[in-house]
Length: 495
Image (cartoon, rainbow, N blue to C red; front, side):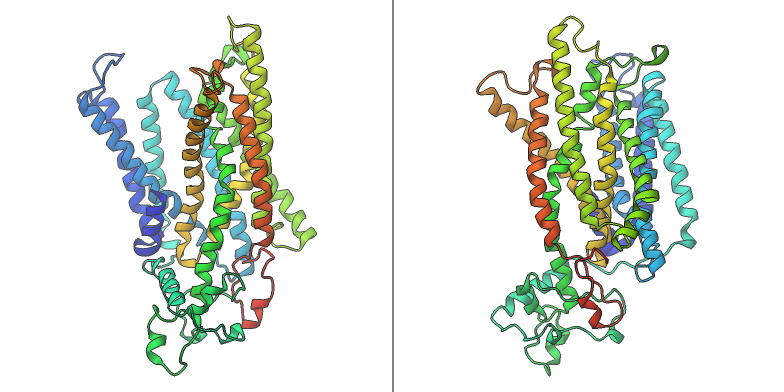
């Protein structure tokens, strides 16, 4: 849904309108969800224990869930990109502030996650689900009001039509001119004069994917019809925008194993927590979902330390206004994910040993806090990789596709969850051929530690591929003043 929502925001509605409409849809879903709990005619059934829910409840419940999903699709990519749009890329100080913005965006996001998995989960467990729905609905209504109040003060980027059409035009023009010779100099490629450019920024020519450059080759300099047809002649900037997207595909694929690792945080890590002793001080029992709050705390600490301590030090050491490049930041987070899987495998091996030594009590003699190190390091790694991915996909897409850029980041996480489920199915099928298999009827009859080792191995091998891509990657290179600027800083991570 974020891919669709991001496209609509960039092409037609604009980011503010998309956020506004999608938040209203999201709020309607929450209201309907709340009503399905409290209105007698919409309840699942009259009794406390439901053997089978009423059909009307199923319809209303799933309708509310789908409304929330649709609302999320517009809300997630558009709101974050609208916030980043408030900073001017051509203003040195504001450009630095935008780098800070992504850190504090995730700080706030994780604070919300922390409240969600502690306060909201506690209300669900100790009051009822209906009470938690009321809280969530009220919070969303208040945030919608605050967002709307700020309308006169925002900076807006107008929707410019489908951002995909110019990319197809470049491809068609390049194919039509595939037999033309390359010009002796990139300066001979077509670009409109700066005085004619009404929106967007000029991009500098790069040497990669040279076959696309033919889209900007002029067949006849005196042919006005050619210049008027974007399907016959593209500018250097449009060619470079297509190159940017094509260069992103390997990076997207290389971050998938990282997504596989973090997918375990909200699934198997929680299931492990259910089997462990969750009692802490004074007999208080931690709800299983609340242990994910440790990861949120880890990310909050990570982005704070990175922003307040590491960035100033790294700026002085490297001379890079980011401190380190975006891909370096993502790579550090990916290394943390390997460490997480190794620790998770060792902890699960210990848990299975406890079960084997005391089958009667199972793993209830083992504290849930054994999961704290892997969850905390998972959060620390997310503070590097997830924030870096958001910044990467926002910055490196064409300026007209920045909501879609955030959607591309979200698609890494979404696709990784699907791949994780598929991988479990394949591994389970293959391992059952020679014995009981890695995935049994419950965790105690499974070998989750071996699955974690497999993920650690995949992520470690993938790091070699990622490092190769990062070292050879060409960042978006924007013309600042004159064409001569294009030769400077092509690979320094500046945009």
